[in-house]
Image: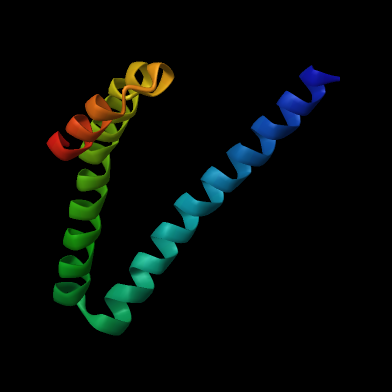
Length: 87
């Protein structure tokens, strides 16, 4: 039963991934035809910058969360306060 659900989940995820890729190509052509290449390029620049910043934050957020596990389990509120001020 779990295998069937996992296969169905994979199929749906694969469909959504290909749909979003196709939609991205379609929307990009619409944006270029309606707004022009220059404005579309600026929009894509900021989209890429946002994606890179999200990737950079991902590592910091995970590191901060893992750093707080021990003080939270021990109830060391002074260390938690220090770490949150540091981060």
